[in-house]
Length: 231
Image 1 (cartoon, rainbow, N blue to C red):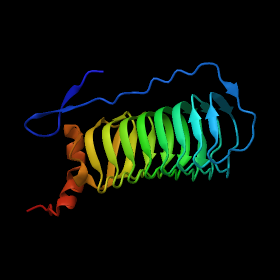
Image 2: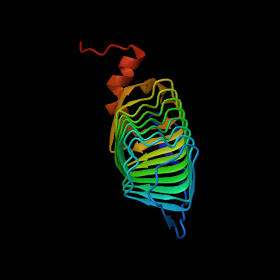
Image 3: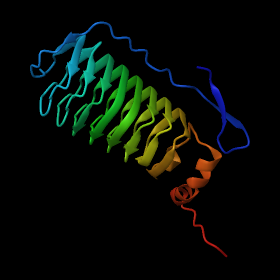
């Protein structure tokens, strides 16, 4: 995908590098037998369909060339898990713990999640497409070549995170927190609804549209300590 030139609300033009999307090609998969997850378990080439993982502990587990479809992940412990070359479709859950996990070459499609813990995680070539995720915790996470597309993110927390080549496409970004975040080649121009609760001053390294600049003017003024009043 070619790089795109964009105005960043300044006299010059800004060039933002496009994210590299994952290319997940799953061959014939083996149906999962329904046993509980195991800490440090190794799952290679499995299809998990409508499996209930509620409350289970899979800390440190590795999922490679897997498909998880319609699985329940409420309070599932997946801290330090590695999810590689896999597709997660229609997953649902509240309080899923993926802190310090690694997601590489992963597609997350039509997820319904709340309070997912991804703090300290590493996301590399990941697409999150469709669905709704409330209170996503990505504090101090590292995101590189990540695309959020046609999804709804309510109060996502990017505090202290590092974002490089991250795109938000036709999605809702509501009350986001970018406090202490570092952004490089982050494209926000195609966000359908852009709301930043904290950290708007950390948007250096991002590209926004002129209309978004106007929408954020009040928040930017507050961040800079500028009072706006009529005469």
